[in-house]
Length: 454
Image 1 (cartoon, rainbow, N blue to C red):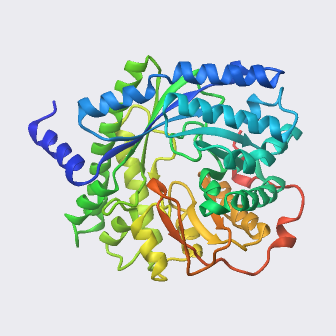
Image 2: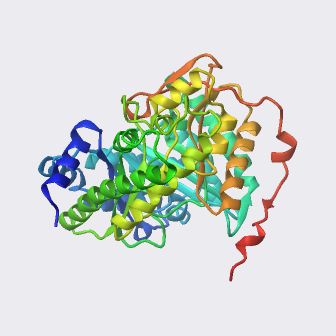
């Protein structure tokens, strides 16, 4: 039974500690929209998205009002478009037309973002997949709500370095085409290793091919709640610290479970997963960096930061697993620079470097996220950054990702403004020594020995 103290505690989390449901994401399979004619395929895609997600936003608003908890985003993810469009798309322009259809459908149903302009090329690239990837810069430039992702590696298959090299060029081109907006297009593009099929968070969300026709996935975020709890045990032992984080994560996840089940019931769509990821915002008090500092660091980036993040990530997952029937997605702690005021402050003070962020990705739930780098960074260097992150994910059997923004025309000491939840980011220095000869090698980095488990 839920007692009055638990009700009051949850109310405090919502009112004082910025607890929210970060997103309700409806996954929609577009496999039945496949056609050999681009126009017919686009018509089918638009019809299915608007039919399935037509009530998503209203349902989220109704639940938010009735339950008294803010549901920040309502989103849609679809089957990777490289799979859906292969039979019809013969040119880059064909794939761009699909992106525009997704954007039009997103606007029609009123969601914040639509994810799934994606390709899964962790072992090799087909000619159609290459076309789709080459279309990404123009697609993201000419749409408002479309998000794109490319999976370039996995623990089972290794890393497709041809895809990694291609993505370095794609990111640079996307930055150039959206230079008038501080290269905003790159904020809607993420490169994965071990991408999950059920991630509700953008820009990496897509509806995996192993999923059903439609599904509801919910992402819950509570950095402010966890920070408040950690503050209460300042100076206590690691055992007390871990138990506190775990218990708090349990309570936060229960809120997500409630919202997810209610949304699934009202929309008559199966409940998929709850993703408990401590995803920060630029709002004061809604910061993962501040949690780490509350654990005893003078500033995030100091020695001990990776250990503190490992504790946080592990205890969040342990609490979340016990609180929901299905936990999935990325669940853990995000460390995006532009979306976290504490991270921004640490970068500006010189406490946090891209090398330290890379070390932290070994134990966080994703990777190098929303990091602004100098606009003159070579595409080969960007490919090297992607390769490093993919190697961390492949070897450690975890999801890693890269969402870097080479801000056209800007350098270290300047900042990029993205607005809204994306915030702003100081441009961080990048190692200027070349890795061109390495990333220009052809082929695939083999899977590690521990991948052979059959």
